[in-house]
Image (tube, rainbow, N blue to C red):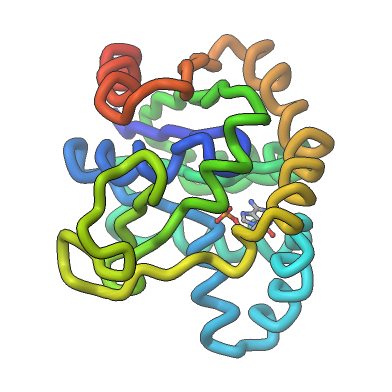
Length: 218
Ligand code: AMP
């Protein structure tokens, strides 16, 4: 059975951290639209230049562009047994496009889709975001406030440089929350009505959240 997981939650709710662990343990690719878009921006492609204008303002990149990127990614060989979608879909429009994409891709396959909603109060999130650092080499995620890190500039796993995302400033983070509440939150009802939504309390430590997640997958 092909396993397809969708992670929904506000910026900084810990979706990326949990996906990385789950992805390793279940051998499923971590498909993260934020990273795919940042790669596109770094490559200075036409699509990347367009995406940058929205990312820098904390707005959603147009649905057609993201869906094209997602479809290309989901067609790759490593997604044939399933995948974890982190940060996609982020609007009803994208969820409807995803339905179409999955119909095309999974036509004759037996699949199981589960949607995890990472629930956490907004006021806890800004602090998480401004203290978030990402390893520029291996992508590990750190929080300067809640984790004990010897050198705040170096990754403890691979020695890579820890960087702060450009859109993790307080100003852009606030805009990203507005976008989340307006565009993404309606997805909670959308998937609840289908009976595939599982709510996870994201205001907990990494290990406890992961245990809950694993328990819900079985
Ligand atoms: P993230 O790394 O998930 O926080 O995403 C960073 C930024 O990339 C967002 O603020 C959006 O501008 C853009 N982005 C990521 N995923 C999507 C998506 N599914 N649809 C539109 N824009 C996205």
